[in-house]
Image (cartoon, rainbow, N blue to C red; front, side, top):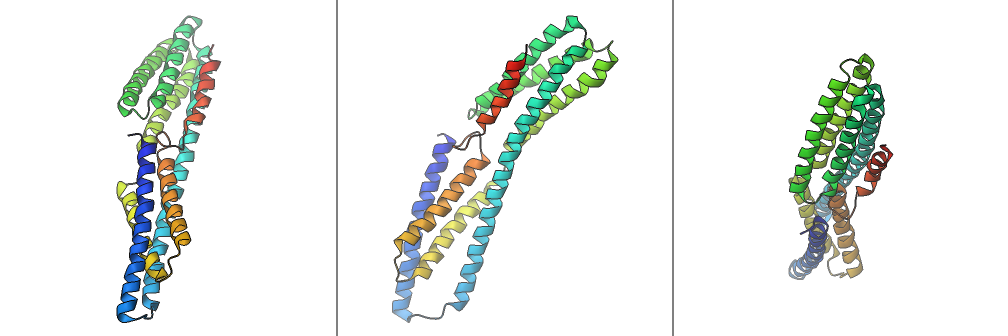
Length: 254
């Protein structure tokens, strides 16, 4: 099942569960009040405040982290496009006889890099294309080293540019798989459920469906957006448009 559908389904379940628990908390409060009478809730109010504060802190932490990683990944695409463009321009430094083959290898390489991310969410296909990119990197490096053997200026300028172009692929690959532990997301969902119960208990005899629905919708919606920010190649929030930078670089290759 696609991640966008799965995350939407889980968020919907969270929304419904929070409404159910809100009503359950309200009924518990009513039964207790009928049995024992209304009592001072000062101490419980402090506990409620602490739990809600913890939920707010965790939600802010996960959302901020996801948004930060989203922007970082966007920036890395631009960095790779710049690195590839710089290295390609420096092909002019190697002997003319070696330039056509090296330029064609660059074209194949950029096509492969674009194919890696277009293959998602098929992880197996993406890793297969990533292996092809690595093979092309080795070919480009070997060709460049051989072509610049008699050209000191090419060795000084082209090889460092190629090294940077290769390094950014590792950076992007690691950034794509680095996410917070699943435990944090599980804890976030559990806190949402607990807070829904406490909110219903605090409402007591007041049904307040508008507040209950708003509360559940805001929290479930925030969790949903956070998940999609965290996985921008899989969900409804997409990082794909920034790949146009690499497409433009590929189009500029003559």
